[in-house]
Length: 183
Image 1 (cartoon, rainbow, N blue to C red):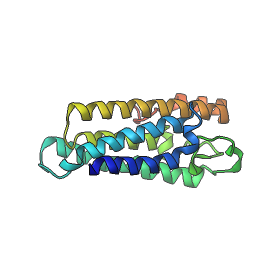
Image 2: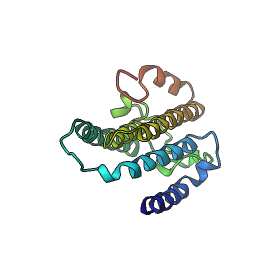
Image 3: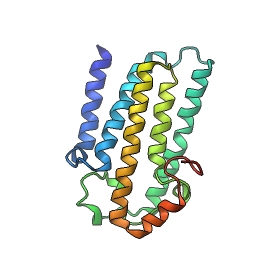
């Protein structure tokens, strides 16, 4: 019962954060909301096993992924804050959170290697949570979260092409989506 209440309360918070995105059905924020929801469900499914069997292989993999998920988050936010120059030119884009309203194409730092470090962070987080206690239901939730993060990235790229034009298309050709040098 507690988990159901926690899911409802946290979902309301996510709806509040994503409200404008949810009304723009093809925006990246629309898909991101559902990725967050599935990651939240995965967390609530596995939270009871968070510290169980701490030196088992699946727990070690989990902790590794969870700690590594911090790296693209920190470097991604840092790059956006220092180089993105959020501006009012993008006020008419409902799917964007305040820090996403960049008017400069950020292609240095971690963005020199991958286009979506924040989504990479969420992917690592989701799979780190999954490995806390692997199960069929957890696998399904992690896979669905992954699909929504992929859809989020594709929608985000379409939005960036509309705003930045050919410059973003060139950027896409020289970077990977989530994992440097691989994917």
